[in-house]
Image (tube, rainbow, N blue to C red; front, side, top):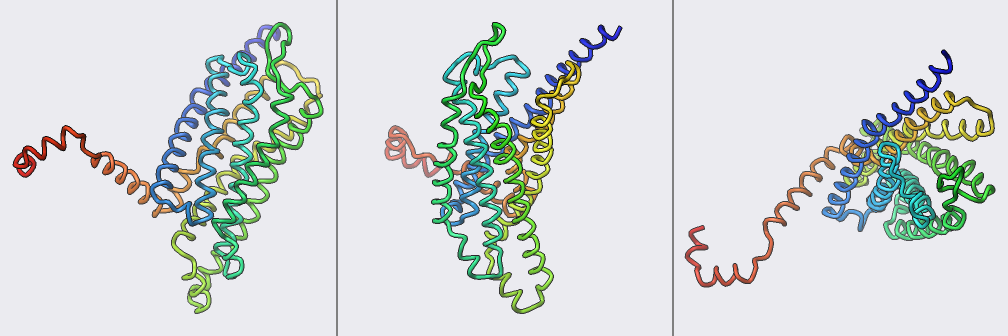
Length: 344
């Protein structure tokens, strides 16, 4: 009887993973991509990224988040729900997929860390610290970090390959040392522990600064310091703090699961136990993509001004669409028939 129940339980857990992918991961991916596209439209319309460091970090991070959602979550949904895996169909895609995905992931976390540090600098009562928030410095940092992360992914292209195991093509790392480096250090360190630590520290420091200013708002010196902060700086700081909270909630369970997986990797596990772990890992990893899908919704929740800017951006977009330049035939018609134009 146990022999009959065991395969049934495993199949039920696998079916639950498939349904989870369709009911939770797919809406997360769709709304995440939509939110990031709206972010791009709004920031292009406002142009704040040209003269504000925090806006530039958010703007660059949005493109990285799109890359992660499409290559990471989107293709994960195709694999788990529809059994479509391009990495076992193309050797080139097998080699570059993980590299592209982690370039997006690591750049996104780098932007979030820089954004949290910039929020601390820009909201500081110290003029010296506020002057460290410079858009020119932000450009150099983004270029340097992008070059570093692209260089960091070169070994993935070399060591990731398409191999056949039990007559089944599989895309995996063929170098054991590099595989351990990725699992034990890169994923846990660069994609979980380090960014959560940085954003938590600077998020708390920024919150304490803002709280001190609000508490002492009747003090003349505190009022001068508060007035010195522009509306844009306050807006970016509030948006950053809300996003930090959501990212921490998504990343901490992911870090715990990754540490557990690495610690129990060589332990003997039954098929049912493995199926349960895969379901839990599926839930946590899918939730982890909320880090890359939630920014727009965090900004809307944190800032009334941002919500108005979203409406204004789409209003401008619609107005520009209606005010398209006339074609040559329409221009000639209006010149020849001016009375018609007047009547209209």
